Structures are given as structure tokens and as C-alpha cells.
Figure 1 (cartoon, rainbow, N blue to C red):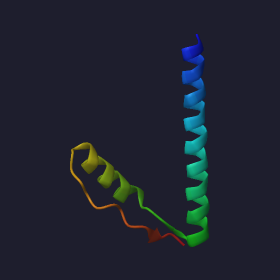
Figure 2: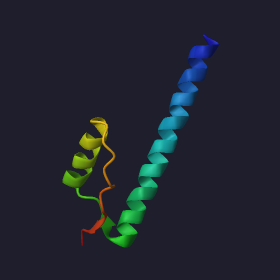
Figure 3: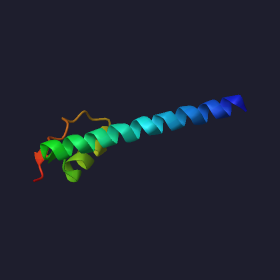
Figure 4: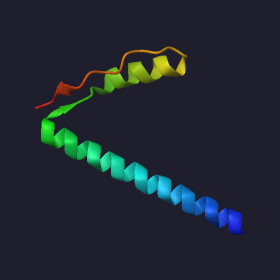
Amino acid sequence: MVDAIERQAEAAEKQRAFHAEALAADAEMERTGRGHRLDDVETWFIARLKGRKPRPARAVSWR
């Protein structure tokens, strides 16, 4: 039982950290006016899933 509670606590902490990182990234995007196009990110992600090592997507201006 204690192990299950510990695992849940760790999962909750990871989720909080994920949300904090996402909020920081959003704030940076709002501040700079730059972000990544979804199509570019999807292409990068699919290549990674196939075992390739593509260059990261470039941030572009969205304003």
C-alpha cells in the first residue's frame, strides 16, 4: 500500500513539473513571438520514432 501511495505521489510531482514547464514555454512564446509549427514538430517526432536523428524544428515568428 505504501508503495502505491509513493508511486502516486511521484506521478503527481512529475505532472506538476510537466505543467510548470509547459507554462514557462508558453510564457516564453508569448514574450518572444516565436514558436514551432505543428507540421515541423510532427515531422521531427515521426522521424525520431523511426530511429532517425533529425535536426530540431526551427522556431518561427507567429506574430
